[in-house]
Length: 290
Figure 1 (cartoon, helix red, strand yellow):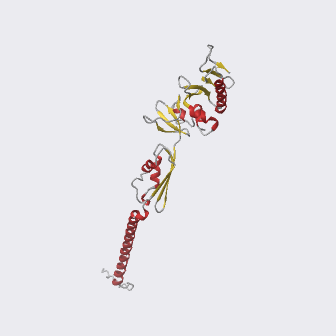
Figure 2 (cartoon, rainbow, N blue to C red):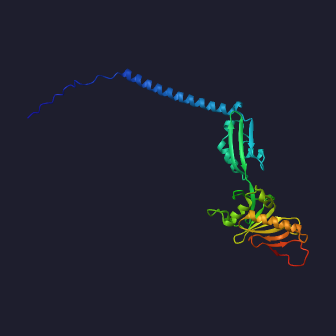
C-alpha cells in the first residue's frame, strides 16, 4: 500500500518581522547612558581628589597655634614631638586618634586629649603621672598614685619619693584580683599626700620596709642622728592616730635635756609603745616603754 504524502500547511500566525532600526537605536541609547554615567562618576572622583589636595595644602588651614596644657615634668616641645606634630602643617592632615595614642605611649603621660579648632589651632591637654614611690623589686620601678607601676627607674635617675622595699611582684595585684594587705597599707600611708595632718611625715620618709607579718617600718630623715634617719614601726593601719602619738612623744623628748629625740619607736601597738631615745646622757638602758 502506498502512503499519502502529508501536506505542510503554512503558518498563518507568524509574527511581523522586527524593526531593525528601532533595535539599533535602543542599544545605542543604552550604551550612551552607560558612558555618560561612567564619565560623570570619574569627573566626580576627580573633583574629590583635587578638592582634597586643595584643602590639605592650602595655607588658609595651616597650623598657626598649638596650645599644650598640663605640663609639669615634660616640656611642650617634648609633648609636641611625642604627638608627631613636629612636621605637621595643615590642620586637617593631623590624625587626632593617632596623636593621642602616641601621647599615651609616653610613660609620664597618664591621660591625653587632642582637639582642633578650625581653621588654625590645635589643643593638647595631658595629665602627667604622679610619682608616689619607688618600688624596689630587685629592679626599681616608679609607682603612681593609684598603685600602678608605670616606668622603670632609669640609670642615674633619683626620684624625690620614698623607696618601698620588702614587696614582691604578686603584692602589686598583677596576678591577683587586688593588692595584698601590705600593699594596701603602703598606699594608705602614702596616697593622701595632700592631707596636712600627715604631710610632714610623708615628706620626710626616706624608705618604707613592708613586711607581710609585721606591717610597715618607715625610716624618717633626721640629720641629728648618726645614721641620718629614725626608725618608726607603724604596723598596718591607723596611721593618723599613730602619727599624732609620734608627734607627742617627739615633742616630749625634745623638751627633755637628757634626750635628743629618738632613734627608734614601735607604734605597732598603740597601748604598748616602746621608744629608744637618742643622745642619752645617763648610762641606764635607753629603751623606754610608754
